[in-house]
Figure 1 (cartoon, rainbow, N blue to C red):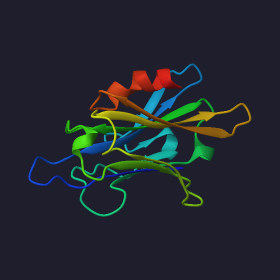
Figure 2 (cartoon, rainbow, N blue to C red; figure 1 turned 90 degrees about the horizontal axis):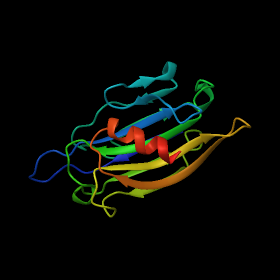
Figure 3 (cartoon, rainbow, N blue to C red; figure 1 turned 45 degrees about the vertical axis):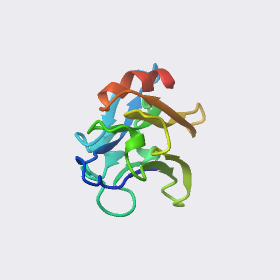
Figure 4 (cartoon, one colour; figure 1 turned 180 degrees about the vertical axis):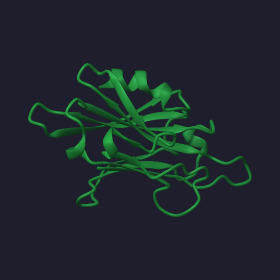
Length: 162
């Protein structure tokens, strides 16, 4: 599964830096690790980040995180996909900001959120994946907004949302 995040560069104002991240949890909703611009690969390379885009320049997804669900360690039972406005602008102040979850095998869009038309916040929990007893992963779209400019501030609310 892939997460894509895109936005347009700021006109005149200071640069806009949105950040995509994935937070991994264990069976007791315990924080295990997070993949974000400061840690581009986690869990033995089963979760990889494309790198930090500081401005939103360029067409298409500006940041991408690829999760190989089949390679995730057995103790990982939940993933939460998040977006933060590291530079502090609220999503409503960012042009054409969106985040989406894509089936990497088929390129089918599973969920998409327009962040520009959303709440005036700096953090959003986009979607969660929970490993079922069968081993299958169940995806739930969230769209829950929180006041947080960093992934660190998302760990507690995201864990509670699992």
